[in-house]
Length: 118
Image 1 (cartoon, one colour):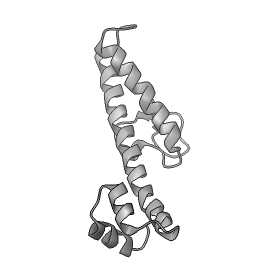
Image 2 (spheres, one colour; image 1 turned 45 degrees about the horizontal axis):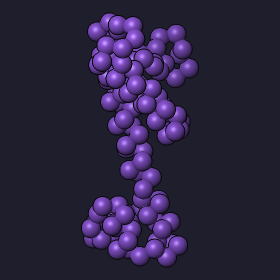
Image 3 (cartoon, helix red, strand yellow; image 1 turned 45 degrees about the vertical axis):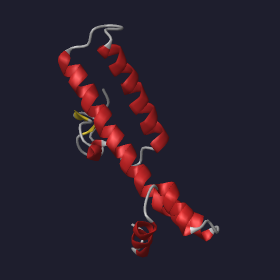
């Protein structure tokens, strides 16, 4: 289980990662995916009784951290897709193709791109 400082610069009192907001903003998506994958593998071991038995509290913490990191990764990736959509349009990809690649209707892409970037 990973922990994050309870307050910035306070390494003495870590708290578990149980919410997407616990995941540090500066941590790269690739590092988060690596953590998510390691947790997934550990949870598969727990589910199938492989390796050392884990106490219930440790399993609960791993499950919550896996969910929190997964949500943080998904949110970051979904947010990044709008800058990629803008880039695709600047490079001549059609709006229809951009919408199809995003699994959205053209109107949804038009509305979203009409808003200023976050």
